[in-house]
Image 1: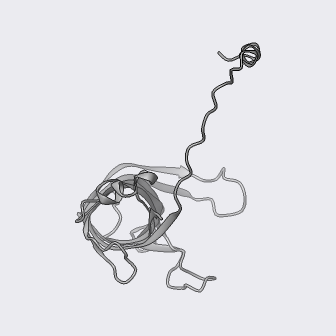
Image 2: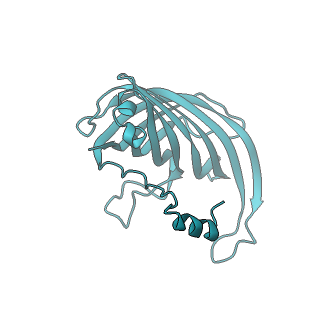
Length: 222
């Protein structure tokens, strides 16, 4: 244990305390365009379906009793490069596993109005031998491309839609070894997709398919 007394004694003998060198700075980072079209297939497993009375919630707004649903979703499939935005144009394999929590209220058509969130992990492997993994977090059936923005193609409550943010790192292959100074090249991208035939509800468990657009950046060093 280094104390003030030991430092003074060391100074009298011409000794100095060891200095901790700061880590070397990371090299400048560079962005490459990432743009993939992904076709997915899979299934969901409902874990819980429960009701909650919202009357105690403060502030203005309706206070109904709502249905909540928790389910696991696992999907996988192939991706291809989307021209002209993709700058590492390999095709490959993509898979994800999500934990989903949604509100599922009975609507006037006899079905369910569903919206909520998802969070989970992904795996990515391309034809160049690059392997990446990371996280996915986002929303289900929550439209943001709506007024008052210049994008008015959505409403606030959508059907069979998901979007979110993907973050990952390459752990094997050329993009991992070439950019080892960064711990491997990285990926940051937003995604948007359509679920078919729809989100699971009690009493149904059909096979699911989804089309997903993934757009963002690869992060490499200069």
